[in-house]
Image (cartoon, rainbow, N blue to C red; front, side, top):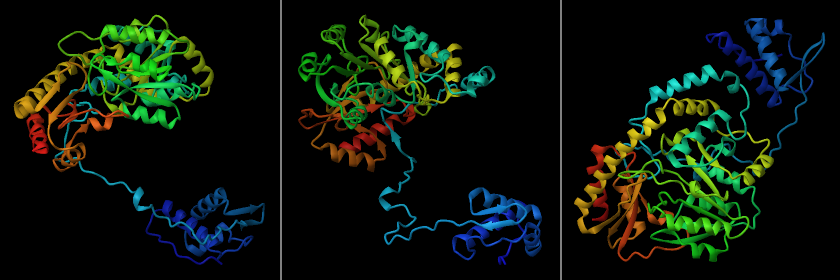
Length: 470
């Protein structure tokens, strides 16, 4: 006999769930033994004063999950279920305190982060129109697994775009699309032998540096001078891969001149199996002068692996990046990743295609160039006005951040603590020092982004910076 009560005030859906849960609990607690016969559906329905359908749905669910079994023309029986082992050190079903997340409120917070972008002028209406086209025209492709490198049509659009804006020389087949530059570099380096030695700009992109170190690659930070990464140091490092950001060095903002670019390309061909990874992360934004062509546009020996992203030009949450592989590496990539599942959302990729094709992407970049230039100039002007001789700014008219050096007796740790107290998001140069330290006598360098700060909030942000250094 089954004994439990049903709350009939609930609708029929919840009544069946009550029956299911009560029987399951009775089985798990041993009140109902293996091979015990359950009442027939009609009998239990009458006993509980519920519909036969409610009992039938409960039995079907218990049957599907393996709590009961049925014998033809005989009825339902309790399954012989393996019991849980009661371990003396059984873990409580609670998350340890050190793994719990603290939810920070952004109320009143001002951001001078280099990682953000502005959505204030993003043409969402046009993006949604492009999305509607994608749904209308690609229902078949959306219901299937895409090409591992991304849909050909999308790669063709990206190929034409970067040829126009960055001078990149490639075919759509050479493009690999992925959810972030780091994930693409991971794909690339998984093709390499662990003996590969990688040279990286120092200071540089610390996230990528730590990724390569975790992959057990010999990653060697290389010092820079005013022209960028020092080629003699790269040569001495024994590297056969070099990771650079020539169009707007991250984080110093330096632009690598043509002489250094040629030296770097010459380094790449002076020995077999040498490659350059060009991270062109925010080169679409250039102020006062024309855009600087990509390093890849000068490469005639297929030694440059070009990487770019739409996270800076559109918004980070889009998670669409790409790399352009030389033919030799493309062949290896296709063989190794024949069963790779494309990591980007296919609908977003086709939407991006129509967004580019319609001209909206280029119009958006032009609009944002003007918008960001105004904010960059205002932030620099306010810093110079407020700090006067105590600030020195690397005023390179490119990208979405610049380097500012402040005279202060305070150290990096103290400045970072004060930034939290002043509720302002900033990043110090300490974050990007991979190995070498920058000799700064009573000076602190900040990497200041201006993309996501509202123009009318710039004065307040500078006031908070000033309080930090006071």
